[in-house]
Length: 389
Image 1 (cartoon, rainbow, N blue to C red):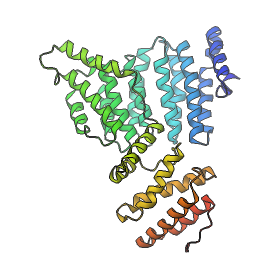
Image 2 (cartoon, rainbow, N blue to C red):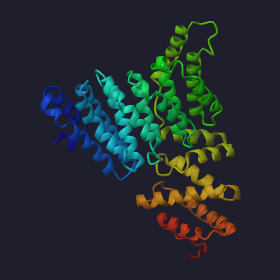
Image 3 (tube, one colour):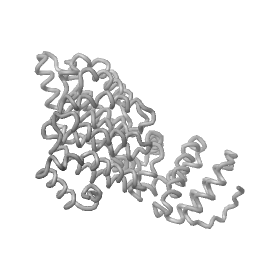
Image 4 (cartoon, rainbow, N blue to C red):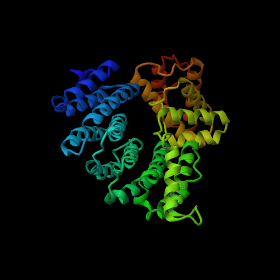
């Protein structure tokens, strides 16, 4: 009963936690069912915010269960991880991300981490990071960071993990690149004895990303680069090997509390910062790196700024394709939500519809008239411009 309503109230989650503490064995039999119900909450949520709320509540519950039940018993660990890995096979990024974030919470919440059982997660994580159908790499990398923090990186999986992390540093998604850099910081902070003789290639990869355009990514890369240089001995002349490793661990520990996964609020902050510079090139580069994000935006203010910018940018034929991709995603999001999601001002709606028509005519793009009609219909705008479908 509790598992079906854990998402509704804090008292219910607290009550579930107490039942597990004082009636451990009977409650333990329901761990898999409880986690399966949590996953069902994510899958049943029809909106991005609904998935996020369900994930937040599910993470609290899984964390509470982890503190009570996780131990060296492989069977118990399996009850936790199998429903989460199953959820990661879902095709929706939100569900994949929720499962990964809850797994990271599970790892960090264990009162006595079952190290050998946790180490068995590493090969499966490597497989997911290599799977083109898995979209939530940034969230899954947080699991790697968590495993490193509790000392559960499997030595035999380290090379494979580093290979996947290096690949994520070259991702077109800046959230993934930042998460990869943060994961390298975690490895340098908590698994330095494993990486001590494996620094050269990682240093080369990090140095190649040292001039990242996105400030948040650049800061994470810089921090990771410093730690890995300290461990390799390339930054601390005359220091002993032990002191080099210790200095790397110290720097990582000082920043460990600030390490976090990039969320949509971070992306919105990046856009706010870019628009504040009035640098058109910077904004365009950010849009290319993040791709269309109307399905994730929470800030109406940022959405309006992006729509206005696209409307103006349509006049530049060099960026026509990118603008149309963003507008298509906007129309699809409006169609999915069934409402004018961003409450866009009517003047702005008419402006982008008109500019889209003009740009489409210049390109002689036959798909644009239908897109205009769909967008106008989603906005409930009675367009006066002439459109042939």
